[in-house]
Amino acid sequence: MATISDPPSDSFRLSQLIYDTRYRSMTIQVVAFILIMSGLVWLANNTVQNLSALGKDFDFGFLFNRAGYDINQRLIEYSNDSTHGRAAIVGILNTLLVAFLGCIMATILGVFAGVLRLSKNWIVARLMSVYVEGFRNIPLLLWIIVIFAVMTESTPQPRDFRGPDAEASMILFDSVAVTNRGIFIPAPVWGPNSGILIAVFLLSLVAIWAFRRYARKRQEATGDILPVFWVSMALFFVPAVLFYFILGRPVSLNYPELGGFNFTGGIQLRNSLIALWFALSLYTGAFIAEIVRAGILSVSRGQTEASYALGLRPNRTMNLVILPQALRVIIPPLISQYLNLTKNSSLAIAVGYMDVRSTLGGITINQTGRELEGMLLLGLFYLATSLIISGLMNIYNNSVKLKER
Image (cartoon, rainbow, N blue to C red; front, side, top):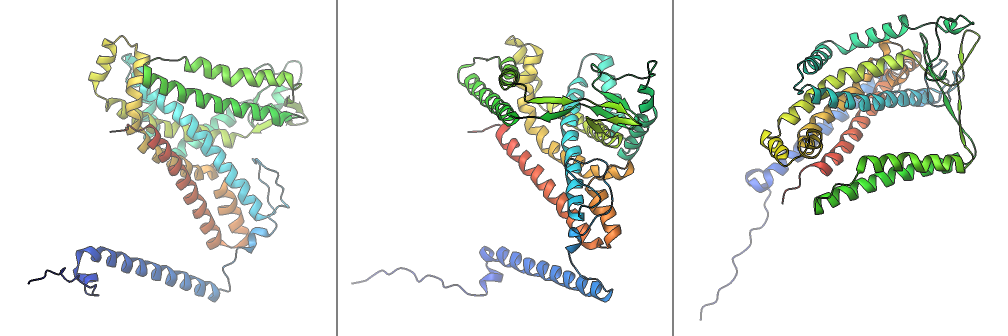
């Protein structure tokens, strides 16, 4: 009687790590990882030895020493008695402020310019072409300096606002002053119950998001189009205004007033911030315009003609048919433009805007002599910021891309 037994299983042999294609790639990756880490360890050890030979050590204790210098534009309390660490935080916040404002303004400019460049109106299309080509082909540094010079030289001095026959006057119901030292705007004064008002405003934003999500799902399911814009406007303004009066006007405004040689009160937006903000926005907006134009052109013209045949107007065709499909082409390069804008903000040193490059990467390094530690922290900040922006935009990209079955 014959019996059939299972074939013997192959036992693992070390030679398979080299000759077996199932394990060879893993072997190569492990060897490459070990070599890279060994190189980094050797580089770090060599750097520490060289610093020791120069009488230096690798220490971040300088962050707790007194800074001794002033920062003109800041979002948190700071004085020259504060530490270098706090000066670095002020610079980081200034960098994030100009990057945030620049990304918003560049997106608005880029979308409008990209759409209008495809306009059938010859003048409008050519004007957008001049804007795109003009800003895209001239270095950003020149635009920063030009806008800063215009803001400084073409605006009145604070003393021009003085007297009955003043040469200059405030705008927007005497609440905003545009001077050669910057723009002064009213500052909010937070009183009792202002926290409740802020909570109501945040809840309104959540309600707007929920309603827009509901409207989109209902449109996909039934085809009914809800008045999203007007409902969003009502949710944005009505609850906040009602609670503002119900809570007894908890938020007031501190208006700028001319006193001495300059305006006092309010919030001062320095010309360096405005010049950097405008230049970054206009420069990056030109690139975004080309990205938007390419995304729109990537959508088949037949879909536009089909939507017109169904009776959709051009604006609804753009919002409901073209832009949703163009976003899958627009968003990936848009992420790169946001990263470029954030990193280009380091050119702020040209107009004296105190960003993280000027504080941590400039004055702090010059005063402490900790160039290696300072540059390491500066690089880590830009790396972390870029990764966060990329991560958030990738999440948004996954939420709007076409879902295939």
